[in-house]
Length: 331
Image: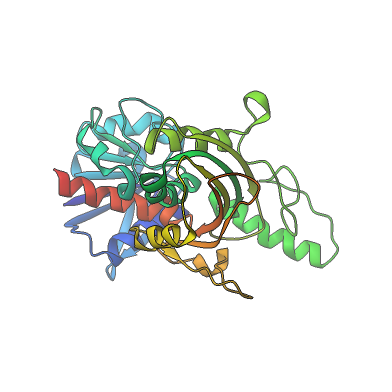
């Protein structure tokens, strides 16, 4: 199997290399591709250095599977070209809502891989991936009616430059120096910003709309959802507070059991100090962790819970490689 990674030098591209190696994914040749600015640099894979090639001149016929992690504009231009020669797994938002492109989280809807029309498979938004992994086993048992989502998203979800800025702003703040935000609408250090991506209709942001639309496409179009997405001063891992209303009655024991047995989920829910998972503990882990499971006493058949996942892994690189694994298994 010949693998190509477009955007290999970015946060997610590097994580894909790491996941391919950790999973021992069958790779005969690995082609690393990036912009002309990064072309010529070298990255390691299984102890060997691989030279990064220039995207503008790269021959996509070399690969059997091509991962795209270089943003929507690059995917829009180059993914259809790559799809003429290989199966494309795209991490950008560009193809996600295309009716002819399956949007996949393998633990939830791998059957949709049987309906690939453009030779392109879309990887969901990082917050959506961890969300649907949690919702799927609960929907199967109790039928979800409505979900209210509040996210607490790390700076790595916005890229390397915002991560670097968080470090810079933290230093400036501790030194009582003036802060001028470059990658955020307001100061991110020691703050929380209720604004991710651009504003769209009715006061929602694009990130919030993506979570709703993608969840409906992946899981069930009948589920009602609403989201508020917040950027917090954390480097890696996204957290979500979920209020889930079911059509059927449930017990907390059944919910814990369903989540603990679900592929990709792990329940850490002890009702004591520290008996839950936080973003820093989820970093570098493959699981989506669920904590703070409790009944919502204000509404019938409703549960509250907290979930945390490494957004660079579950929300991007890990899910992308698992899509490749599922695709190879089905084809």
